[in-house]
Image (cartoon, rainbow over all chains, first blue to last red):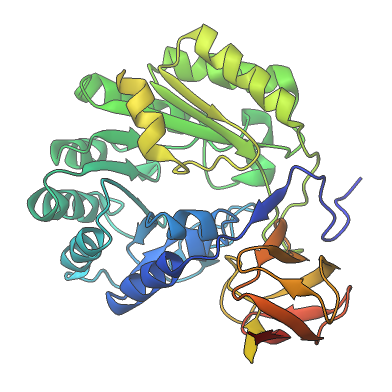
Length: 289
Length: 79
């Protein structure tokens, strides 16, 4: 059964905050010509996060080299890298007074290092401009290239995040150009290189996976020494994207959370509106406790 | 007179939402921050709070109508 258009269960409801801070956040991001995954992926949490002065920066352009069927980011031929982006991003983070900064990117399979050195430049610039803030990176798979992972880690982020996104049986449908084992390997390589840096991964549910498949992904992530887990409801960005197969009830998310904690994750965020970087600051504090 | 525009709901500029329910009728008094209208996008349902306190004097978009971000959906007469 496909999802009827614009019909949602009662728990898929957000309240837009009436806040001047959200406008200020938009103004700062616009002035520094920065992309956010909040806007590009049409995130439903945008009003709430912008009102809190938080945003997830998306670097290396607004065009992705892969065509994942769940994602609203534009696909096509990517733009050249902008050398001034790390400085502009750090200035915006400083103006926004962010205490925890999340940086992600489009996938750049066209670049030799997948954009790892650009990630590293951003982390270094943030360390210089906002030394008191913690930095989380949400990276693409770099096609499993250990050298690229090393380049990012060498710049010293506090959290290294790479999402598996879904269960392996749905990869051909959801992430046709990605590989589940490569994603797990990215996390293991990162932990092997820098055991002191927290690793994090997440997946969407409601794409048609079975519960036991979700549990198996959690076990695989634990084997890959992943510290933090996020689970959220998949929401279709447009009728051209994969339909929602099922709206998972909040109680089920709670069960995933409990089972994740029992398996040994240091922190688990699991709720319908959880996104990879949603409330990241609090989730990371929980992992460090 | 304050023009209530459909705020950015997280969609790309130029995108739209469907009016699902008005929580107030024309002529009603409304407080700033109170839930004014419920809208749906492709991703979720959103309650849009009233940006001002006053009387809801006019509603321009009926339930089921599709409106664009930035479009005027109502008028509030401020006291």
